[in-house]
Image 1 (tube, rainbow, N blue to C red):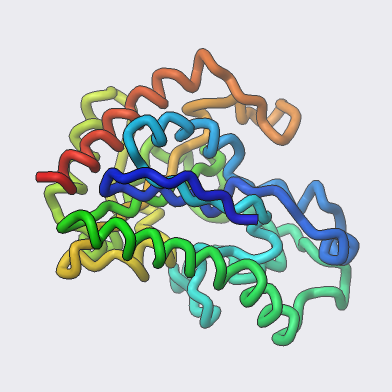
Image 2: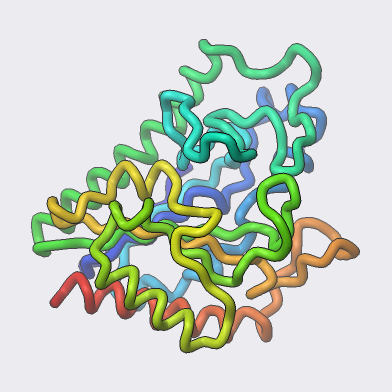
Amino acid sequence: MIRIERGDAPLIVSIPHAGTDIPPQIAQQLISAERGRFDADYHVERLYAFAGALGATIVRTETSRTVIDVNRDPSGKSLYPGQATTGLCPVETFDGEPLYRAGAEPDAAEIGFRRATWFDPYHATLAEEIARLRARHPRVVLYDAHSIRSRVPRMFEGELPMFNIGTNGGQSCAPELADAVARICRASGASHVVDGRFKGGWITRHYGCPGDGVHAIQMELAMRGYCDEGLTVDWPPHWDEARAEPCREVLRHILAAAVDFAER
């Protein structure tokens, strides 16, 4: 199911990976539904709940990325050639563990069904909201909100910076927007990087077209910014309000700067 909270500011917050819903017919094909939900961007919708007060439009799906990943190239082409990643309909976790029982992996027909049922509606919604806001504003910002565990050895070495800004190598948004976001992250004192391991997924790359007034930017947060994600904690990680508030304050400044950039 897609959730939409419409606002009139020139800002869309896309939340493609916080969903955990897995239909029963798919869950029974998995080794376990728990494993199928392991790599969700837990609590991101709660972290950005303030965005509506800024006039932002929030678009999110409640469907798990294990069903279909709405932030992957629908052709199946890898966004990070040569690096470990997961596909349109993932068959393994970030850690390389198999998701499906042997022989139960989705075939081409099943992938096509999932795309029509969940992927295409999410992108139709994003396209409609971009068009709606572009009709009112000379430019809009599409902010793609993500989070991930701080340490995933199969995908990157060491500990991930707290704030990972993705602009597809400067192609998906104006330098002024990327610089404004980076300055706020730097001022927070937390670690950050621009176009590091995460340069932006399909959403950022597909919709970001500065020449047409659509500036897309991805934020991949390390989960330690708002919850306890240590190896000894139960999973999914629990929301930690005291830890989350400083992180959320930085994000408030970032989204406010995005609106200011679009309105100038």
